[in-house]
Length: 396
Ligand code: ADP
Image 1 (cartoon, protein in one colour):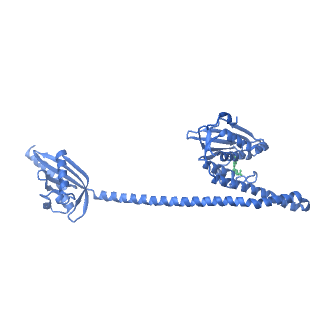
Image 2: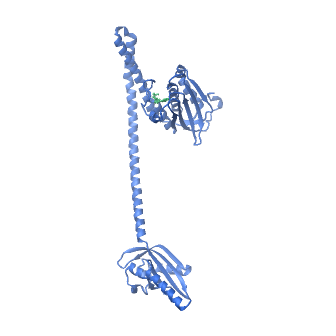
Image 3: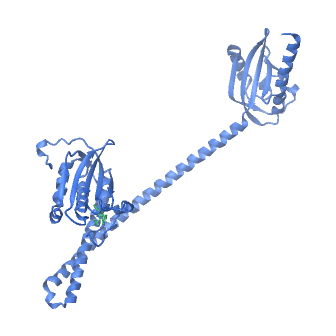
């Protein structure tokens, strides 16, 4: 390099050194003393240029002691490079600032020199601190909210249980006076109708019919309360057996309506509470044979294994169907779509949903007006129980 080129290069280096927006220190490795410092670092730390010259950095701003500084020099001599992502410095007016510190050992034509680059990261650090503060606050608030939700859930559960107990005891206690009304109105109709004018006989009949309806409603309410509250132990239940029992329980309705019942094996084994499952199936089957506008009801019952570990049991009918906007609502207590044409209490499907939920399953349906309904329940598939095959009763 010519003397002129060397001079130009030196000038370029100088301009960079003077204009840099990072602090730069030049240190003599043999004495560890600062021999040059750029204007940015002078201004950043608030000392005069002369204050730096001939000092070690820990004597002017670095918040580390001499021993740590010596260790850093030894490392620099060995590896030629050191870097700290987070080093504390102190300005002349006592402010603590965080810097990123990179130090390199260079050989300049046989003479060694250390160049340290110092970048102010206080703003980034502050932002990080604010962020972590906010995060801490958020997680504290979340923990508080979770606690509150837990408390409210416990309170709700408690009041729900109290409410269910209350419903149960009301339904139970109302039955006794109701039975008296039912019995005496029937006695009036049967034994004293001669003494009554036709109008009076009509009234006595109304009382008797209303009392019977109310008795059915109370009976269903009691059944709903029982399904909601009783302890259910889930065991492997053979669908073949429980479907047969449900069909037998609906025998009178099936016979009266001339319903054609089709049951399609195979029947897997599910995890369930047998009495509850039977009640669920009875409710679905009796609806399937009931909600038909004309002709004989045709009902198909079958089950399918699903990939998610559930068995889906279908009860399908050729009845009047249910518009999609009512398909959620009908599972609520006392919700009935067809109040005049078909008898009922509006609790059957609420029992179905509650019972299936309590057995860890889910319910649903596919239906449209005029095309029949396909109700389904999902229950967890279970391994076959170890009952000798001869003792198993099944349906074909
Ligand atoms: P209930 O049968 O005593 O009226 P449910 O709770 O069993 O009460 O059913 C609620 C309502 O849902 C019924 O009143 C009826 O309107 C409708 N529903 C239930 N099952 C069927 C079905 N298979 N086909 C058509 N409508 C049905």
